[in-house]
Length: 62
Image 1 (cartoon, rainbow, N blue to C red):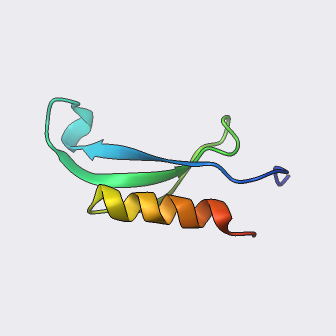
Image 2: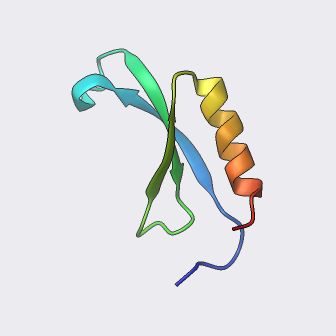
């Protein structure tokens, strides 16, 4: 069932082997509109690219 209201996305760093002490190897855009069903929307090489994508994703109407 689609969630009503605006989409919400966040950007999170990707660390190698889930170890927060290792360097960031990329960035995920995560749809957090439904906190019980968060979905990775895309993966990016730079934080700036991920932020732009998250902002565009929140503006899209599907």
